[in-house]
Each structure stands twice: as C-alpha cells, then as structure tokens.
Image (cartoon, rainbow, N blue to C red; front, side, top):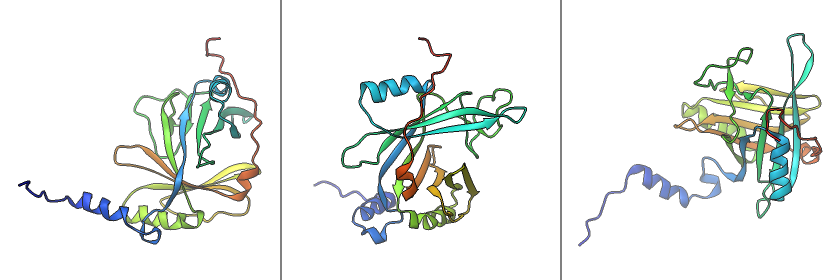
Length: 222
C-alpha cells in the first residue's frame, strides 16, 4: 500500500489557486506581454527578427540624453517585434544603448561602471533578459502596488508620456496617470533577482509609430 504523503502548504496553495475565480486571484493576468532583451546592434537585430524570421515591427522608440555641454544626443532605441498568434500584442522588446547601459533605478551592477555612467545604471548586456512583462488591466494596477507593498516587496510605479517623451516614477508608491499617458507599469524583482513588470497599454499607444530607422553600432563587424 502506497503511503499517503502530506502536501506542503505551498503546493496546497498552488492547487487552490488553480481553481480560483478571476475575482479571487491576487493578480489577474491578461497574458505574457513581452520579454525585454538587450542587443548590440539594432540594425542587425531588425535584419534578423524582421528580415529573416518575419516578425512585424509593431512600434519603435528613440531615447535621447544630454552631453557634458547640455546638448541633446541620441542615447538608445527600443523596437517591438510582434510574435502574433492568439496573443496579438505579445512581442519581443529589444533595447540598444550606445554606451551599453540602461538607466534603471534600484539596480546596481556588480562590476564597476564606465566613467561618466550614472552610478544607478543597470547593466543591459546584449543577449541578456532585461525583464519579463505580464499584461494586466490598467484599473487594477493600484491594487497590485498595494499587494507588493503589503508583501514587503520593493517596487517602482512608472507612467510614460509621448509628447514630449518623459516618465513619472514613484518608488514604493502609486501616482495616477494623467492625460496623454501611453503606458502604466510596475517593476519589481523576484527572490532570485529576475526583473518583472506588470504593464497596461493605454489607447494612445495603439497609434504610436513604427518607422524609426534602426541604428547600426560602429563596433559590429560588417
């Protein structure tokens, strides 16, 4: 006779979660939204994912910064490649940064940063996952912030706007989006340091362009 094994509390909770109604769930996901990745050359990335694999370019973003003299300079690009299917908004989100680093508050790389790079910059290596994004209903984001806070998990709430491009970030708190908001996001880490995002796209995002010319990195062999 097989001995009946006692079910661990964690497994019992997981089994209960499988039978929960939508209203009972702590977080109700609409699906996987995107995986954020770093690349070393956006032109080469576009040639592969769009040119070879045929993934459509859904949206494109360009980021600028300021140099020592206060002049606006190009800093990076962000391309969204659709993966289609039954989840039409799911995509791969590739970032290319001219200095190889992505400014991301709260994450400090283990290795020394190059001179002049923000000390709170996060190493965004090509070929490395930056974060995993799960899509949620926008009206529930305040509740998710409270959930994380009550669990003692540090998080950042960020809203982004396109005219002009800027973002509003609140650490361990929620700031309601204003008119013109494109996206509403919450960022946090899992116990192993994997960077996660809950995100909602607002209606204005649907009309965001996808026609930026991808940059080639001069260090890439041709």
